[in-house]
Length: 534
Image 1 (tube, rainbow, N blue to C red):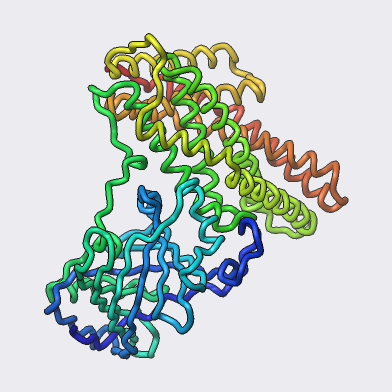
Image 2: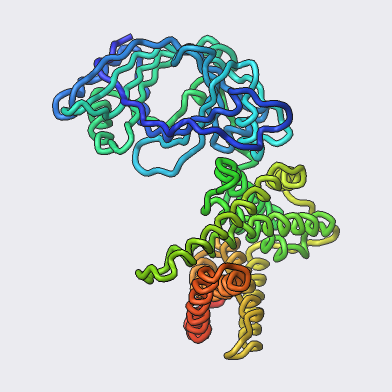
């Protein structure tokens, strides 16, 4: 195998942290408790056995060879490849460091450009037992299925760091020659080169990619597991847009698959820190529950009531638990948007902020408990079955072609929202404004669900109603914030009560401005609509 003169500086890892709670029954071992997290950003190249890596020295810097490693990597998944379907890989590897090896769980991370970006969670330990914390992390994807060995890869890795002129690490180049043991490609082999970019050194990516491609390497995002074993296209996660020939069942299948994909994706990121779940993940999971509840309500006349009613009830329960954290996140934003540069009530604001942080932590832990509950896991199973097999239909229902049906249902929600706006008049109450917001969201979800079938008019309807929904949403947020601040003013110290009173007054004024503005926003949107037709 060709030797490499230079390789990657490993991306700096976060400090060792001790995970708290959620480790399941029994006394956890050290391998369960010690978690190392890092962001992996790398280029991958497929090459043949005769490929000679290009020299990257010169403008890029210099090479620093590293000792060759002999790695043994074992991948784990369920028999139906649930981790792979969720974009995850779980492996145990020996040969990188002294000792019994380490477990690594890789999660997809958002990124742009040619690199494959993933978040890595690592636990030290032998391959005799999967760390309980790793099992907890993948619970939403795996649920009741057992994790088993899939395939073993034995690799010879030639390595080098690429350093700049000042000696700083730009990245690490790993040239792996791999032999597969087990699976349907037992005994086969391949060669893959990876360039793992050091943190904050992404400027070198384009140069490295260009030099390797000029030398004959093929840029690829295919992971080693996919090269070592045949992996099915994820059926229960697939989201295939329906066409005009689709049935109601196929439309609902897509809605359930979308909800499942968003819930499982958010599940992983929420579990990273149960006491402080990621804001966007909580939001996306809550939106998924609301959207599916709305879709099932819209199509409930054609679905088995014995199936749709309990599913909607469980989605409501989950949405309420997620909503507790989400409401706290909305309140946090009022502190972040505070523009008053004076410090006369800084102590009071700090006390309120601390109260809110504790409240969010309590609700985050309640969410973590719910996500480990059999009730939540069963809901995911129900959605998976519906996504794979379709929902049970109502006996005797025959909605006919789906295109005219969806057009009729979207128009029905348009008319319902118009009637509701006329009914409340120009000075609706808080509860009436909240009711309009719910109807606006239901119309948006219906139009988005129908867009693949009905085309541009349905998409424009969904896009324009967002303006109304956002205005009503901002109004609702001010009502919620004002109510929370007034409550804190009654229960807090003098300093915090003063700060709460001042901030509540600001929310009151913002609410009044939105109350005056919302009708003009509605009139503008209402006049721009075109009737949705099949």
